[in-house]
Image 1: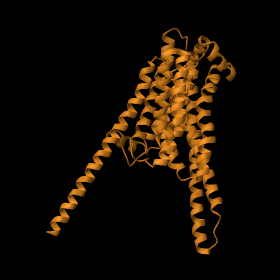
Image 2 (image 1 turned 180 degrees about the vertical axis):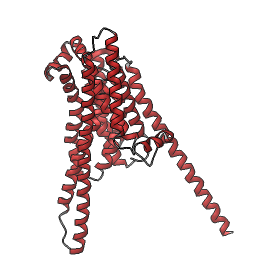
Image 3 (image 1 turned 30 degrees about the horizontal axis):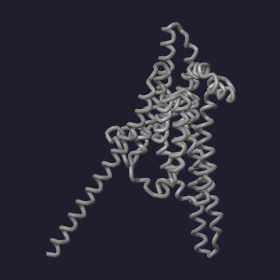
Image 4 (image 1 turned 60 degrees about the horizontal axis):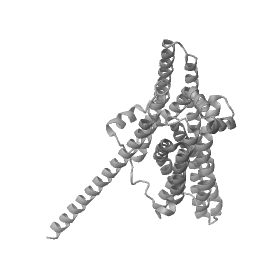
Length: 382
């Protein structure tokens, strides 16, 4: 079962890591491995959300999402988007960006380095909004309750996450400008670029979030209408064809999933810029991670184990928050790639370990309760 579900992912992993060794030696191997682990970690919550919706769909629409949907939202976002964002920020054509990445790495590296403040500001703001909206939401299950409980209360203030994100952006741009002026003003003009790019990242998040919310509302309306029609059909004896009902509901589900999946794709793509500026290594690492999104989604749907490790989603979002902070810091200071990659992996591992401990504690409590009930029954019998 495991090999059948993850077989293609294992194969792509082996091929991708081998290609990294041929491309840049063992250093490239390490970077691709870090990117792959980071992308897989960040994609777990994506797979969980996808699986929760996908299990409601028919086998036909599941195949559509896992084939056409993967090509559009996964490979398109994770492999094409890095080229586009570099081309836009460096003001060159996509073909030129790919050509430079393959044939003139020094010039490409310089272009990306020059464009890094804009890329980091855009990505940092987008990731920060994902993290803030998560921690300010009141959830039934809390991982770090001492932190999440007061933050959930603060989250009742309207637009708080947007205000905090803008404050962070203003502080970052002001600090960057001040530092540039103190050191000769070489990058003083880029402070404005940082500000504009950060606002663009915020707008992008709000547009993607708005579209996701729109399709989610449409989906809920469609499901409610379908339920009403089924009740009407039972009363009148006239039944609407099930295929039409399933098709309409599944179509809105598919649209919602595409927007949602695309929004999740941003974090891995943007986070990759915090690890490396080499577009070839980025494509290899994100490509491996993209395959695991599909495999994890299929596995979770088939196994029905979405609720087994309840803190993993928390860990993934804390990793996103850490990446957001790192990206904003790298606008002015350099941070080693190993630190960037390790932070996310450690947070995911911590959340997994916490989930396992929670499951064991619940099992032990249920065992004690069952033992107590047995004793009560024996006492009553005596």
